[in-house]
Image (cartoon, rainbow, N blue to C red; front, side, top):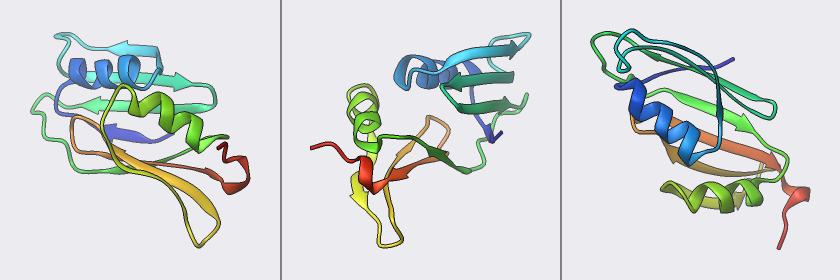
Length: 116
């Protein structure tokens, strides 16, 4: 399971839960700003780690989905994305977005599931 750094746990929680539709599987935080946050959406799981001193470390995570375009339509309606879906020459359909701490989320899936 990927572990992403965050500057602020409450901001990260709002982004992933309200923006991307993840649910919280666990939360360990004394102050609501630092600690650990477990997230899940279908088969995708993430952990957010917010140290006491903050400082996101510009990480990147790849999330595999069955339908890239459906995921893009849902998420782009709620959060900003870096690039719209595109077919990669290596055989996947992808798009990218950033979370509030500057971590890149690279979403990928099969080209064949593209819906027009």
